[in-house]
Length: 244
Image (cartoon, rainbow, N blue to C red; front, side, top):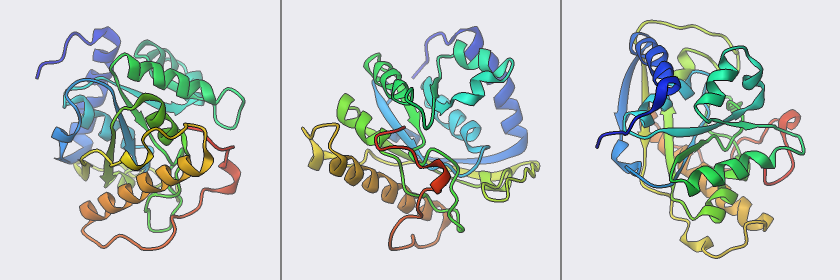
């Protein structure tokens, strides 16, 4: 399938990111066909590293799909970076503020226009000591109820070698092995018609999303998924319910 014109700014991002990624990573793509070729889709990803948005972005872009990332608003204050993010219509998330809901409203609008929206339910890089997905925030679940769009799990592994989420050290190397895997849509039929503001519903859906991501990460790691509760959110960054 061919992508339509993507514009100067998106092409600029591709020209910068793709060659860099080609040199720095040795990617394995799995399940790209599970990302709908057209129409709205919510892509939920585990947040393993500050490097994984670049890897996962190319994975989705090669489907080919243009995409709308939800990302922390502080990136928009970085010279040039902020300009590019605005020009390619990415969505800032004002975490722990009264403006946090505006990200979900913008994401809902993007879905209504037929775009693929990328959301990291954890809201931050994992702090699990073994780098499994943590508890998620409920924004992705609420967005699914509001839009009816399919929720596609996208798991990644390997980017932590470039940037480690706990030590926060950057160690880029040539051709670092990375894997990105998209699975079939998560079955949310049990929640069909549920109000998008019920905390029990949102928490139940979010738990299903994060456990599915944990299982998919385990598959590409080649080890069994851990049992029991997900690693809790860091207290310092835990926002009110129904946040992206």
